[in-house]
Image 1 (cartoon, rainbow, N blue to C red):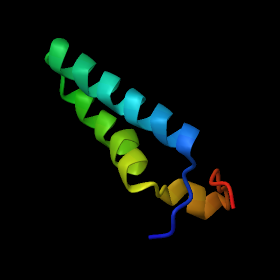
Image 2 (cartoon, rainbow, N blue to C red):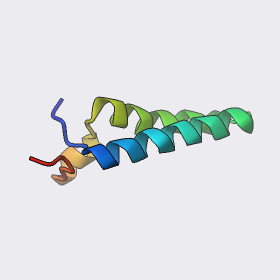
Image 3 (tube, one colour):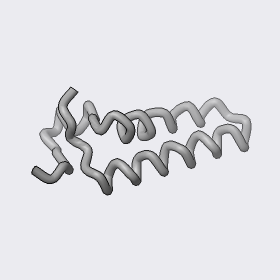
Length: 60
């Protein structure tokens, strides 16, 4: 997988993922599973949608 998620983008994705998962747990909703998407893309620093759209937030 090619790295295409920069450091600021990565931090925001990880935080958003954790918040979404926590809200899912708090409200006892399976919708919290959606938080795995930003969390995993932040942890692996690779986003499939960015690859498709040709976006790269990493500094050279």
